Image: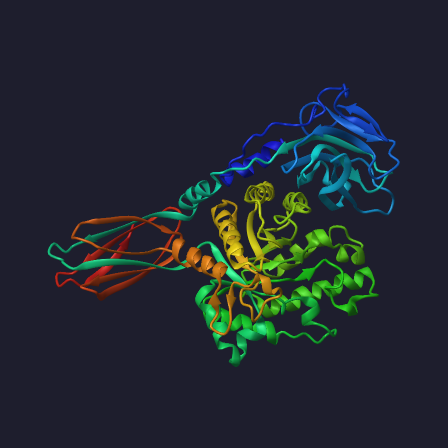
Length: 572
C-alpha cells in the first residue's frame, strides 16, 4: 500500500515515471537464497516474513558490530554514468536515551582497481516510530569504474533493522527533455482564452489587447530589507518592483539577527521593507522563523533548560506573528533541519520541528508553512531525507503546505536529467514545491546563461513546482559575485540575466493584440495569471477590464452600444 500511495502522488502531478532495468539481484529479498546476490557483512541476515515493505518477505539484520555491518551487493557498472540507489529500512530497536540515528546509503566504487567511497544519501534524524523509510540518492561513477558495492550504514551497531525493496538503476539521458518540458509548459501553465464581440453589427476598427499583469506561478527574488527603504537605493527598489512579483527578505526576519540581545527585537527593519513591497503589489515569503543549524539562533539561549528553550521559542512565534500577521504568504519554519538538530538537542524533543509548524499555524492559520532545505537538487545528500520528512509530517497531521528546495548550483555543469530525477523524488511526498534560493555560481556569463535557461525551463515545466526565487540578482547586493545576473548602476543584464528576462517577461508572459469583427471570436491561449483586457477603436481605448485566467480557461464577450462604446464585458 505504501508504494501505491507514493505512485499516486506522482500521477496526480502528471509526472512520467519511466521504468528502468533493475541492476540488483534479488532486490526485494523475495528469494531466501542469497547465493550470488546479497552478502551478510559482519552481521546475521535472515529471511523475515512477519513484516515487510513490499512483496511477502524482507531480511532481518542482527548481530552487528559496526555502523557498516549489514547486507551488501556487488554490481558491475560503467564509468561516467549516473545511477540511483535506494533501500527501505525499518529500525527494530533504539538504545536507551538515543532519540534518533543517522542512516546512510553507501557505494564503494571500484575505480581502476582502487576503492572509492561515496555517500549516496543520508537521513540524520531517523526515529524508530517512523517505520519503513526509504534511504537513497544518486551518484556519478568516475571514468574507470567497473563495479559498485551497495550497502546501508546505520550509525549505531546495537540497532537491529529490517531491509526490503532495494534498487540500483541507471539514470538515462533524455535527449528530448527540453521539447518535452516545453510541451508540459503549454499543458500546465496555459489555458484557452476566447474573446467575442457582440451587439455591434457595424463596428469597425475594433481591436482587443490581452496584457498579462501577474503570473500564477511565483517568480521572485531575495531582497535586502535595508535597501528597500534606503532613499539612496531607489534604482534597486524600482528594479525589484518592475521585475519580481515575489520577494523574500534574506536576513532581517531571522531570529538571531532580529534579537541579538534578549528582549530588544528589531521589527522596524523587516516591517518597513514588507510595507513598501506590499504597497507595490509584491508578495512576500517569510524566511525564517527558526534555523536548526548551530550558530544561527540567538546566543543568549545557550545555557537555558529545555523548558526555557520551549518557552522562548513559543514567545518568539507569538511576537513575530503579532507583527507580521496578514502580510506574509509563506514561512520557512525550521530552516535546513536536515543539516542541524540544534532545537531537537536543546529541547530534548525529537519532534520539536513538528511542534513549530503547529505553533505558527495556531497563530496564523492562513499562512503557508514550508520545509526549506539544501543539498536536495544540487546533490542527493538530502533528496530522499527531505521527501521523507514531508511524508512524516503529513502522516502526523502537521500543517505542512510546501517543500522549499534551495538550489545553490556551484557550477554551470549541471545534468538536467539528474536534477529532474531529484525533483521527482521529492514530489513523491505529494506536496507542491518551491525553488526558494536559486543561484548558479559561474564566472562565464554565457555558460551561466545556458545553465539558467535549462533550470528555469525544467522548474517551470515540472507539475509539482509552483515558484522560483532567485537568491540575489545584482552584483551590488549579492553574496557571491559569480552568481550575479545584473551588473552596475544601471542593472545591466549579463547573458544570464537576459535569459531570465527573455523567459519570464517575454516567452512566459502573454501579450496579445488582434482586430475583431462583430460576432467574431478570437481564440488563443494565455499563461495563467492576472490580466487586463483593453478594447480599442482605431487605437483609442474604449474600455479596460481586469480578469484572472486559471486552468479552466476564460470566455469574454464584449458588448458594444450603438455608438460603439463598451456597455459591459461578460465572463462565461
